[in-house]
Length: 117
Image (cartoon, rainbow, N blue to C red):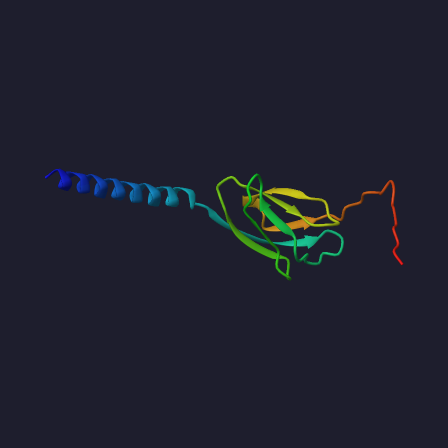
């Protein structure tokens, strides 16, 4: 009888653990799909390879050759768009349809050129 109580206890514990894991999975997997296109402000052409990241997370993607992107984000997320040679831009996910990046205009104070023969 004691062995039966022990196995019942472990079966109930395992079942409760599985239910909690499934509930936490559904709670954290909630999000909304966001998609759009990133273009250059001057040339109006799409920019491939732009990093699109959910602010303060490691979740993100890069734009495709046509400048388009899509990802699933949590509610009230902010997206950070960055690419070499362009100013970074933060946009609320609900307003991230078409994003325009401006070329970065920063002057270099010192340039060092090293040549090897």
